[in-house]
Image (tube, rainbow, N blue to C red; front, side, top):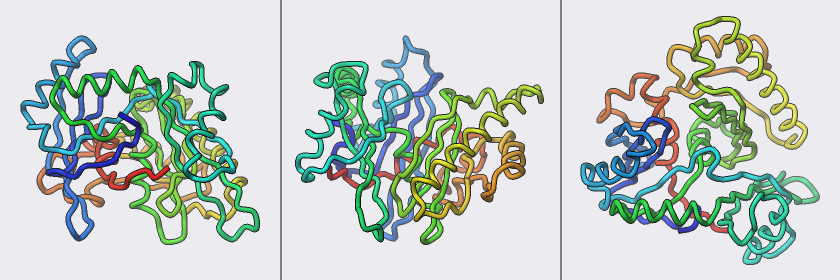
Length: 316
């Protein structure tokens, strides 16, 4: 199993997302019109010792073999590295990238599964140099994940990463000719992405968890808000210097429940871009899953639904 493997369309897409307290499963179907319908979402609680039982149970309950299945890696299971694109033909790109990454990983390059994502440069610039993102995960982890799904009798066709799931959602929010920043939080921390023309241009982790911004103590919450604001300011300054040809239209916050409004107000007072809160019901047909109208439910399934939007095959 390679990262970003080729998709097989069966009865729709099923995404399995392991979280600290359980497994999120989302089912999505694309209509011929291009719109996306969420057929079902379900959560299987577990701890580390019962994760395999939960996976086997969901496979039986949900008839997992009928679907094109994706699995999202979690923080710590992979590395996303920004590097200059090697000046080689496309068919030699992965080989050249392995050579470039051999001193950037904390394990031997032969033990790594690698895929690459192009970051397009300014098409009007005289020099077309550009950067790339390289995704690296240990072979052992990829093999174990494949074995888990094989044992549960779920045909795993794609192993994806949160940055790409978030990119899929961000691309739906872009005004023509302008970029969008999207900021999400979960138990592992914050994730900032910037997209333009459907491409991922920036991905940054922020060391503030969802639980931290949900805390009631105003002094501690303000300290988290300050840290988030500083990280955003630095990231936007870096982005503006590196990608002068992209105008950032807005910053969108992922569904965060009750705390979302407070963070939106704080950021609006300290940043130069408009701040919005995402409502997934405006992006998808959720008539089959009325509970997704709740922002708290949207927060749990945010990345799984983003991963379910995946349609293309990585070409590099």
